Length: 68
Image 1 (spheres, one colour):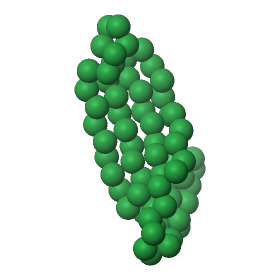
Image 2: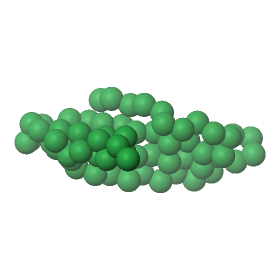
Image 3: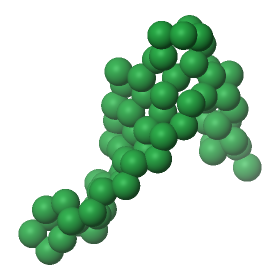
């Protein structure tokens, strides 16, 4: 599993987790995890968005985010 932090703010955090699926081999479970933080930086709310994407679809997503 790959995991990285995109945003770490006093108000919220955004993490991405990528787990390869067993079948088919080219499929990945991609999780975007948003955590809303309270005044004492405790998590007060968490939302997880799950997508199943192939390696090609992940590459298109990355390209779309970085190209203007």
